[in-house]
Length: 624
Image (cartoon, rainbow, N blue to C red; front, side, top):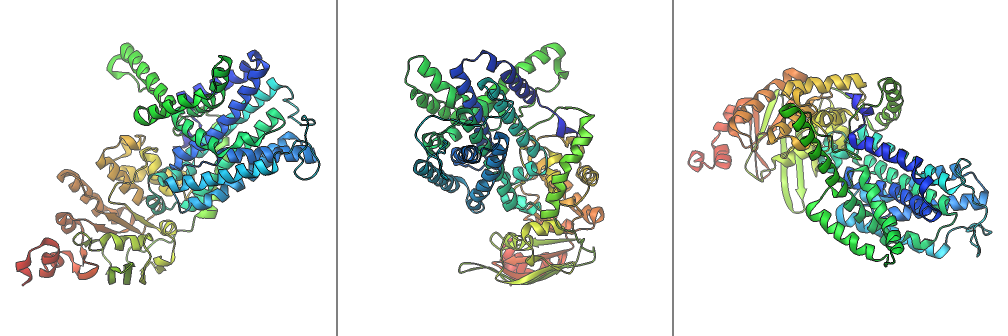
């Protein structure tokens, strides 16, 4: 399964060739003015990559990136002029310190999303702008701040990159490493966790993902890239000015990231080129550089309306269409698939079979460390251990959603039914940890589940699906299921075996590499079921799994549910409005109405109860 870790996509090959061309050719042919412009463009490419990474992987808008560049540049200048340290040390120090700043910015992201998060990060960028204007950037003066009037002297560039040409090559190399860091993260457990978080934080937590940790991790990477970009920009110029790091520039590079294509490495290059090269070209042509703002606005409007994947996405579509035409003409209907549209967010294509085993072992070290930090030892539920819901009370303000609900589920498959608003999903959310109780508890296998955080319940062995299939479009079927196992302390081979076995059980093994966005609703539901069956689960919960399914699909789903206990020993709880499905698969059923328990017992007896027929089926005459 991990053979794709060292694959290169067609767009990845193009990117590496582009970087090689930029390193070997561009510095040799560019004049002194354009060397500085190209170096600045490369620096901002790294900064834009951080913005694009946050937006494409987590759907989060961070508008502090240019401010973090300023922090990285300030630290590099301070360490250089104040202590005379080598540039490489200053570069690393800048990156590490801006990681910490990124973590601090992650604090509001733990509670905020969308517009509110964007506003908070923009305010942080404004704060950096004020600090830079007040204290200025060190330029060789005495004292801690080190500011003086006069030209720069004594800046230490890398010993292998003293000239402008060499420093441009050095910068492009570091930028390329930055892209590789993003891509490696994307292909490992963090990338799968981020894809789940972007899809749904609740679904991510139900898969055992520590959402707070992975959000903080992502902000740290974005901070690292911003700090490195600022440090390289300081190395290029030897001095910096606060006007370069205005808060409005962070807004601009985010907008240009969308125009360029946030999902692709090429999009970051386009964005930085529009930001730095286009104004320079306009000046050379005798035009006002501010005209670039009009072009940016038109490009953003075009991207929002007709090109959500930006310029890079359009180019990938164009290349894919051309490939189809060429291959169809040459080989007819059996032509191979078009090149993958994959860059920052997707990938495959082999680098080296000889390199892969050694590198894979090295890359597993941080993964094992992560499992140690966020994972927990699994305590399997004995198949004969009941699930005990004891006197659970849930209030939303003055509304009592669940009123002292108790039930002991002892059968392999149990049901929970009731009319809309009865509290069924609320009870499931209590069991899975998404809703806090005002009283009561849930026990299973000697564990009080209500004492565990939601993602810890997944580590323990609790699995659930949602009314809407929560399959990450960015991942294929195999990766979606693997994401459920990432936090668990299994070996890589064990995880691969678990995924393969679960996909075979649900009948999706032949579609293991099919992207999530290409799955139909039933395939998505089957993928959801497979996610629930890996990692030795003790409890599996389905919330209206047959919603929107055809009769045949419901029949297939019911057969799978009946086999779960024999497959992995887990107890299954099913919520559904399909009475026929409940009657077929559930040995016992709990009935709720307006947060009250009105019946619990053998399913056939419960469905024949006059109170249940009156509340759920609306047959009032039978209740008399």
